Length: 126
Image (cartoon, rainbow, N blue to C red; front, side, top):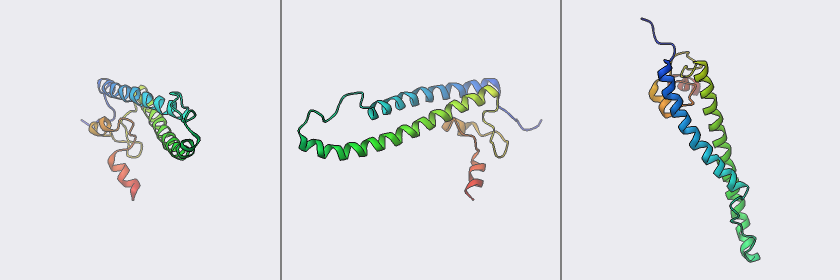
């Protein structure tokens, strides 16, 4: 019998549950970052003395920049996870977009939004 070209429906369901769990956590983290950036929690320096406010503004700016980067990275992760769910629906999930071979289950469990096998990633580095 030939090499397997796609994962079975049962296997796809296993991956869907892994992705849904990661998606829920990622969205929760993203919302936390968004709230920090928008200062929803109200923990600001407006009510402190002007001297402390000047010192705090520099640190606050750096902190917001870092939080913004984290939020952007988390949003990209969420988009990648959602794209993986679409691939599950299309039954193309787990197929390397370079080699056309199945990505090993171990890799997909660790990086469920992967679209490249390790072999393809190493080819890209060269």
